Length: 181
Image (cartoon, rainbow, N blue to C red; front, top):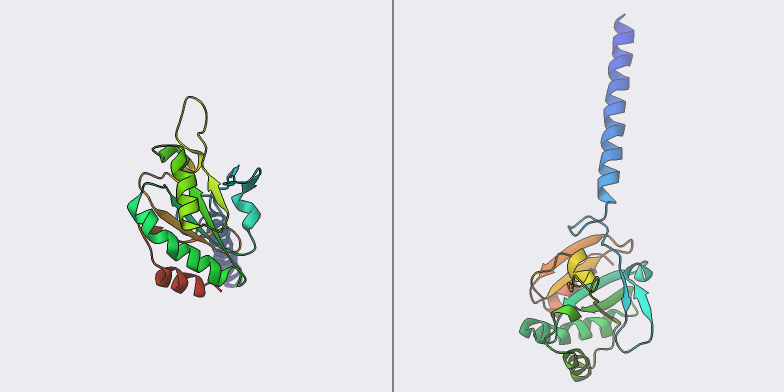
């Protein structure tokens, strides 16, 4: 009787552990906009290219995803930092990607002027309205963006590791990605 009770307790402990593991594993792979979640995927046109790409197509390397608009002073201030990061880490397992929140732009020429002024060398998605009725952008909606800039650092599997709201610097970005490399 005592032996059966010990076996039952042992089986119960194993079952609770397995349930905890399954719950933890399931939660850590859910899609969301918080750290630890898989970044929501999207497919959008790339600036100045006649092609679309998906965020998920950049998996396999660390991704630094910067969301911006051309009129935004902090966005303009930090763009040289992202360009420097791109130049220094493009061959070291890091993708730097931009997302122009086109639905937040004041005029259509702002994006072209911004990209040309800074000479942005990395792929940049151009956010598109969800539909004709809802003019809010796909990325703006998926990531619930109400202010800019926003930067997401994703691991090789597309999981959000760091979120930066507001302007950032090269040193901060480098420190965060070095921890992942």
